[in-house]
Length: 222
Length: 89
Image 1 (cartoon, each protein chain N blue to C red):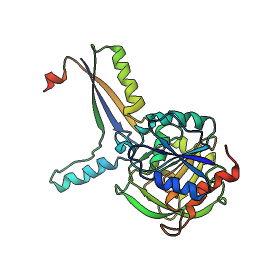
Image 2: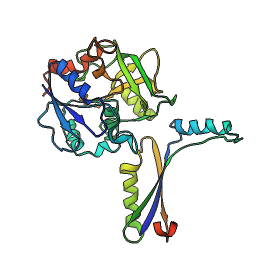
Image 3: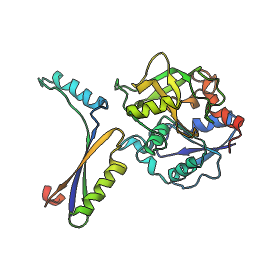
Image 4: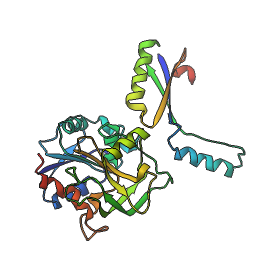
């Protein structure tokens, strides 16, 4: 499959995301924030970083980048979209996902090998995991606290839309220990931890993250 | 020139870690009796023409579209009458 990785000014993890896409057996396609063009890709990854310097709010400016108009339209047609960290923030600002990401409750940047439970394996990004698989994936964020009103939280829980949940410790004050969620249709996933940094034994805490990129092929999503 | 101020504040029920950090620092500097601090943002916006209801509505739409995230923030828009940047300086 051809998977696009968007580079915004201030993106940090686009190269790692592209590498993870290739390691999972896909072709990675570089997408540029200023181009309203998805170059015919089958899926899109919005990588981590500090797009537009996190000015105003994390993801608030990126949400209006020309490429995002296309991403939002494609997501509406069912194209798989994965937002990692800053990408998750952009998806929330774009209203493709509910809620928002706020500054860590302990006010410090967090960087750790984080244990997670993958609770929803029906999305194209998580289909290669066993239900309730416990994995370790790197987490690094300053504004990763997931918040939403009580009604939204109940909806996410009731509809099984919590994709990943923090285990052992809640690293950033996220409500309900939420590490990642999906939209109603299940094609858009936002995730605060970084699976693209957990794809090779040489670096990081193992290869548990590879599954986020490996699942697409199995589904034959196009 | 029509001048408006948009104040954006974190909603009451949302934890405000930046305000908490300031609250923690004040007593260390000798300021006593500070009960709470909340930190927000202030935008000063100038529009061509005279202030009117239509421009006020434009600024409200700017606030809800971009300046504030209604999921976590509230905003107020205030018209600043009879004042330009030059006057203020």
